[in-house]
Every structure is written in structure tokens, then in C-alpha cells.
Length: 559
Ligand code: DON
Image 1: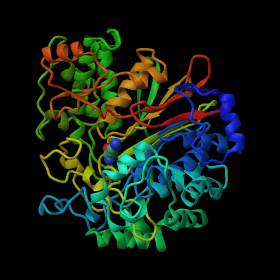
Image 2 (image 1 turned 90 degrees about the vertical axis):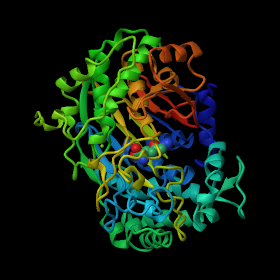
Image 3 (image 1 turned 60 degrees about the vertical axis):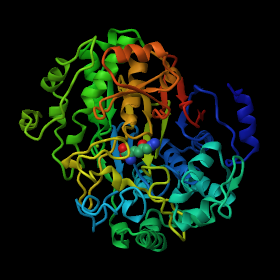
Image 4 (image 1 turned 180 degrees about the vertical axis):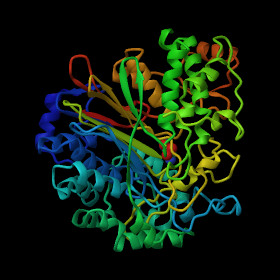
């Protein structure tokens, strides 16, 4: 499925941004600036912004806003996210624009009264962070005028876009969960759209106009903020206009690690991704998994064990403003060695959860439904940005005046201690609800540096499977020496410690491999929804190579 590039150029010169063209084959290669993301439109937008003299930050803002229009089930203005950012000679930075718990929230708000839901309805909604995140990125590093960056999204909202099969499936299966506002915006007289129908969102266009004119204040103050507070409260929630006005992003330092001569920049708490991936990469070297042939039974057993061991400490983590986060301990030589000593090549290990009395935690310190896109330019400037509403269409609440789909990120907190959440994760005390706190995440935008330059940018949606997927794509490129497309499409395993089982990509591994893993004592379940990875890397020829995951829709391109 390789589209001749001349054809793409021809289309670009003759059609507007809202046409569904310009998606390139996987992997797509370019020289200046490339993107991989969940929609072919991202490639058109990146090429357009870059041609106007925009940098990776400008491209990020324009793509982020456009995805809020075309993939509202996971990338809306009503969600939150993280980005790892490398601009010019600055060190890699992290912007955290995750949702925060409203001021009136309490640790027991879901566990005391089981009728209160952290998944459906207004009480599930955290204060959204996406508009503030994109605005703060623009203020710090943007080159082009803000209004220029809002323009592609505005055009898509006003003039509409052609809905895809994925859009129709994600939307129609959530019909019952939608508030009246959502049913009005995403259905035609109560009937689902079909692929190829055009969806216009005039209400969302009004919100984007305010955002274009006033920046983040156009969302967090005035009519949009009032609409969000009113719609959330009408669905049983507690967000106020004061919560909206008080929302702030924060800048953090990434977690760093070395792997096979590369410096890997990883997402810190409030994501658990960086801690788990750092541990998993170290264990692959310690256990010499790296010496096993790619995709062999030994290697897949080793990767499953490494993930199980690395996920074990996840429940100790939480928002760094509230929790102690024993990162140094969980990635220490001593702890990794204790885990490694449990490893056997012929048998799955049995590990107990970390107890509050574990001496590990007493050790002193030695010295953090979704989508992702990555952009990388020739000089190594890059953004890896993951954004989410948590579940598909989040809480199902869609603001009535502006048609903004609102997250259910509150479910990422420890809502019912000891009980698994929608991703099967049993969460810890460090992640209990508190006003102004951000819930623990698995989102793992990641950048890879070699000789002082960023050479790879990647990330993924998919709850805890994000972590195992990003880890394995990193591993496949850096250790197995796959190209970015081979690495992304390769079969993956997932283990998150609890439940104690290995999940594998359905229909991607031979039944013999599954049987062999079972023979080593693993409980194995084949699943269809392994996380989808999007990535761009600079290859050995100096070309920028971008690929999206064929497990879902996507686009990769640029110029
Ligand atoms: O932050 C997290 O870890 C979750 N809210 C992510 C949810 C997700 O990736 C669902 N995507 N398919």
C-alpha cells in the first residue's frame, strides 16, 4: 500500500486540508518533519505547518486540536495528557496537562457509596487539561501565530470531515452512555452515522473560535467553562467554574535511562510508564534476554517475566505532589537483582505483591481511551504527545452548548481499594483521590537520544498495555534492530503483574508459541486490543521514518 509521493504532492496542491489524502504507506520516509498518529489528516497538517515555517511545537498544537475534532472519543478538548518535548538546545522536558480532581472530591467518594460511578456520568470527570497543555506549549516554544494553529481544527469542525469505520464503531457502541448533548452532536436523529458520512460540529467550532481569540482563557473562563461546569453538574458531577479557572499544567523532568548505547527519556509520575519501562529495559540486559533471537519462545518468555517484575511496583506510585514515589528504590540495582534472582528460563516465576512493610520501601532515596502522535524533525526537535479521555468518549457527558466530550479520568485513581479498575489494575494508597491531585497514568510518551540528538519519538494508547507496547517497540528497534514499522507491527506480549497472566496479540503468534509459554507455567490469553504504537525515527541513512500501527487506523507522513 505505498502511495506514490508525487500523487500525494499533487493532491496537496489541489485539495484542502479537510480531504482525507496525504496518508502515506507504512513506513513513510521524509527529510524535514514527519509525524505518525491516529489519523491521516495529521500528515497533511504537519506538512502544511512545516511549509509555513512552523516548528515541531506548532505542528503539535495544530495536530492536537484537529484530532480533538476528528477523534473525539479519545483526543478531545475535554481530556488530558502528557508530552515529552525537545526543542533546539534545551534539555528534554515534560509537560503534564493531565486532568485534576475537582476541589470537592474526597478519597472515599466512590468506595463509600457504590452507586457513585468513576466511569459513567459527571462524577467521573476530572478538570480537563488539553487546551492548557497546547496553549502552554505554544507560549513557551511556538513560532507561528496561535490563530494559524487553531485554523485546521476550526475548518474541520465547521465544514466537517468524513467519518471512518473506527469513528462509527466507537461512537455507536457508546450510544447508551451519552448525555443528551452527546446524542445530539454525534448521531443523526438518534441514528448512527455510517463510514463516509460528513460530520459537522458547529457547537465545537464556537468553542474553537473562543480558543482562537482568547487562548486558554477562552476555554477555562467564560462561556465554555460555565457550560462544562453546568453539564457536569447536571450529570451528577462536582466540577465548578472555579475548578476550571484554577487548572494549571506543570513542567517536569523526564526519567532517563541508558540502553545499549542510547539515552532513553521516559515519562515520570504521575505516569507509571517511565518507572516500569526503565526497570524492564534494565532487566532485559541483566537477564540476557537481549541475547535470545527476536520473537523466539525464550525471548517472549523473558519479556513476559521482565514485564511482570517491572509492573510489580506500579501500585506504589502516584501524583508526585502528593505521593513519595520510591522511583530510586524500584529501579535500584539491589531491587532489580532481587527480582532477577526469581527468574528461570524454563518456568514462570511466582511473585508476591509489595507489602507496606516491605524493607524496600524503608530504603533511603539514592540520590507518572487515548491516542498518541509523535513528530520528529531532521535536527532532532521532537514531541511525543499522548492524550486521553480514558474510556471511549470518557464519561459519556458531552457539554450541552459547545459539544465537548468529557473524560472519565477519575477512574484512574484508586477508587475502590483492592478491586481491579477497567484495565484490571489494582491500585495503591499513593493514588487515592484528593482535591487538585492527578490520577496515576500509564501513558508513556518516549524520546530516544543518540550522540546528543533525538533519533526516535514514540508512544501509544491502551491503558497499562501502553507500557508493555512502548517498551517492546523500543526493544525491537534498539535491540532486535527492526525498523520502526517492523517493530510496531511485530507481535507483542503483555504482563501487568496482576492479574498473573500473559496477554498475547491474537492471531499474531503461532499456536506452538502459546503452547510453549503455557508449558512454562504462564496463563496465556490472546487479546485483540494490544496497544497501538505510533513512532518516528531517524534511520541509519539519516531519513525520518514514520509508522502507525496496523492494529487500528492511522497515518504517517510529512515531508
Ligand atoms: O492514563 C491512563 O493510563 C489511562 N487513562 C489511559 C487510557 C487508555 O489508554 C485507553 N486507551 N485505549
